[in-house]
Structures are given as C-alpha cells and as structure tokens.
Amino acid sequence: MDTTIYYFTSTGNSLKIAKDLKDDLENTSIVQICKNNMNIKSETKSERIGFVFPVYFRGLPHMVKKFVENLNINVNSYCFAVASYGSNAALSFEQLNHLLTSKGAVLSRAFGIPMPGTMWSMYYPHPKEDYINRIEAQRELTREIAKEINNKTIVKLSEINNRTLEEKMYSSFQPSGEDKDFWADEKCDDCGICARICAANNIIMSNQRPQWQHQCEQCLACLHWCPKESIQYKKDSLNKERYHNPYVKVEELFQKH
Ligand SMILES: Cc1cc2nc3c(=O)[nH]c(=O)nc-3n(C[C@H](O)[C@H](O)[C@H](O)COP(=O)(O)O)c2cc1C
Image (cartoon, rainbow, N blue to C red; front, side, top):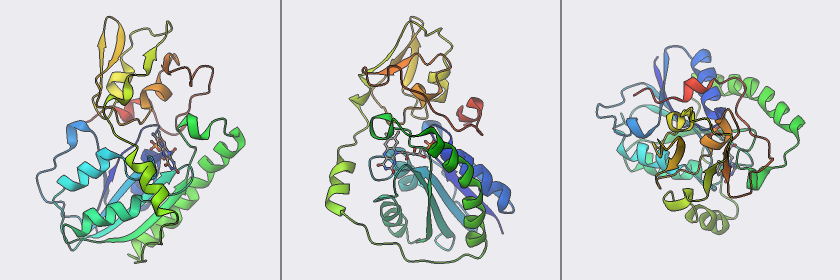
C-alpha cells in the first residue's frame, strides 16, 4: 500500500513528524507544500493521502488551504491529517475536511501533536523543559499514529469548542502586508538563508539585506532560522530565544521544486 504525505513547515516540527511517518509506514513519499509546488496537475492516486501541518491562528495555514483546493485527489483514498500545534487543532481539521468533501473525498482520521509553539508573542517565554519534553514525546506519538494509519481507522471529527472565538481569530490572519514589521539588524551578513527557506517566496535579498514582498504567511521561518539571529519582528523579538526543530537541518527547508 502506498502513501503520499503533503507537509507544510516553518520551524521543522511538521517536517519531523512527516519524516517519522515516512519511516514508520511502508512505501511512503513526502511532498513539501511551498510556493513552487502549489499546483500538482496529475491526480494523487496513492491509497493513503496525508496532510501534516502547523496550526496558524486557530486553523489551516493559508498555503495549505490553497494547496488542497488545487489538489486533484482520488476520492477513494484514505485521507488523514496530523496537526502540530502549541495548544490545539481548533478549526484546522474541520477546514481540511470541508475542502476534501468538496472534492468527494473525506478526512477519515485527524491527529494532533503538541510541539514547541513558534509564535513567540503567544507562547514565549515557554519553559525550555516543556519544549524538550514535547520534542521527545513526539517520536512515540507519531509511532502510535502510524499504527492507526496502517489500520486505516476511521473516527468522526471532534466538536469545536468556542467556535465563534476561533473563527474571529482565524479571520484576523491575512497573509499580505503583515510583513512590514520584519527587519534585519546589523548582524545580517547577507547569507540569503531567509530567502531560501521562505516557503512563500516572499523574501528577496537587496543591498545585502532581506526585503519582504508582502505575501507573508507569518510562519516566522526567517526569524527562527536566521543563523545570526539578525531578523526581528518590531521590537518583540529582541533578546528572545529562537527555535527550530533539532532533528531538522536548514537545507531540508529549501524548496525542492
Ligand atoms: C503565525 C503562527 C500562528 C500560530 N497559531 C497557533 C494557534 O492558533 N494554535 C496553536 O496551537 N499553535 C499555533 N502556532 C504554533 C504552531 O502551530 C506550532 O508551533 C507548530 O508546531 C509549528 O510547526 P512547524 O515547525 O512545522 O512550522 C502558531 C505559530 C505561528 C508561527
């Protein structure tokens, strides 16, 4: 039985989960959701199709939403999702299921894995110990999830608490001019890693500095992965610790398509 897993990631948490699922499930390929790969023309014929993504503003990252909208899916495939989050999956599974049912498919299983929260304004300061515990617990949780996927179990989606509040939060998230408050301080050495890892192709290097092009997904990859910790958001990020998943290398974030 073959499986295709589509993943979106910023700091590597979701990529680590996707890689572990690839190891735990036979005959599995993982495919990055990124600007250069938003239109897969041929039908996704795998018997199992998975989506692994972070939760943003209580729901699906916009690029994941657009990607699934464009995806030509075999309606008989077993579809599953794994959300990585700081708190909970909120609207994300329902949103994904809605997109899949509009194509005649259905989300059969949805799993969540608590990971280090990457949006410092919400989660920082976050006890380091808790980060480490979550990172270590993820491997075993993923093994358990793989067993469920192997058995193609089906479970109805849970009810959403506080729907009105969640929807209000989600609608406040609009990728566009939201990047005007990013800047690079004097530590920037023009290495261009921020531009290479931006899944939205939203950064160009100009005059030895990154410039954000107003199609930002708010994923914060640029800020968290900058090797010099030179990228800042307003003054909020000054002197704050950066995070990226310790099992993922920056090169794995470069767009492959
Ligand atoms: C812009 C942004 C918004 C986020 N919103 C939420 C949220 O609403 N709920 C939540 O539980 N986690 C939220 N998070 C935390 C991420 O979902 C979590 O850290 C995830 O594991 C990151 O995965 P990644 O490393 O694959 O990008 C948010 C993170 C970012 C950057």
